[in-house]
Image 1 (cartoon, rainbow, N blue to C red):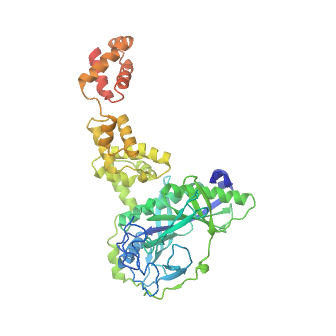
Image 2: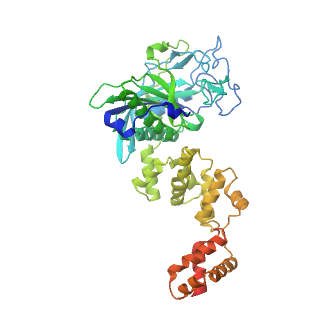
Length: 501
């Protein structure tokens, strides 16, 4: 039985007729520093398991942490970009809980004294602007990574055994926590996605992280509760952990609205708990009962001195901030000659970064937009992934566009080339060669195909000779079929009319 069948859901529209959703989003961003937060271990992605560890990040007795200055700088720049206040003095704390991926049995984090707080980020959805309040953005360290082997779900339940890789333990993290988000219910899933999208663009613009969600460099926890219409008291929340794609943030939010509504409508009670989101099913399942802050037994980290960034340094860092994503998009829209609506289509497709890179690789802006928001967005939707996760690069898309502009491919043939690249058959040129997809540009070969089509459709040819040029489509279709779509239809039309004039 699928996971989806074990959950009772209320229809989305019916849920919103009875309840108002309240969201809170917690986004964890791995900083792209060369070394970890409190030791000098490297942070290279994809290294062999447990090769980037030392006594400090393994929590061995006698080891002492030292704060990574580059991580503090990155944290301040993120806080400034989110219009936060920067603390004049803050310190780290020990957050005590045990999991196999926490080698110290506690996480070094910040509790009641974050480095930045009280900010905001504006997002746009359906032509409306929403200001998302930022409660805090604090520094901490990442955990290790557990892999549960065996079983059907990849979770610990049902697994034969588990493996732990501590390479990630100690990598600098910034946790960005929103204030409660109250927006029109039908827009809540889209606003959640728009916020994480905007935040990812901002993080990348700052250059502090690649924020690649498929690598776990940026992860979102979706907190959601419902309250009956007309009430002001917040309901009990659930926290869907480590959602790792923009599409999944939207889907998880929508699903939890429907699940909460079904529980409440049946007279049930929402359990405050963490939940796991299942990409394939589009559902969530229970994880563990959610702790309150006091359950973690926070206390100040005795081995680290407080962080006290000078006002001069903070203002110096403020001067390094890039254009905001909103200003950047407006500049690009002006350069490309498109409307705000067209730019919103690009943003909704999650393809802005890919389009910019494709243009940088030599493609005209209109063609880059056409492929990423059209064919590639369609494929991404069918596969249930974000467009940036497709196995095709901006340079490869630019090459496909170049082949079209050079007359070597038609749009129809180009779609087959893209299909081949996505299937792992190689770069565009290799796919063209392997599949024999080049346009037939030799007029003599085209004329031979045209003559054969005219002979097979003599009555149609007479209509064309009599001036009925609308009938030429029949001849063109026959030629395209005989050349397996590798003829340029415009050139075929020109030759047909010349032949029959």
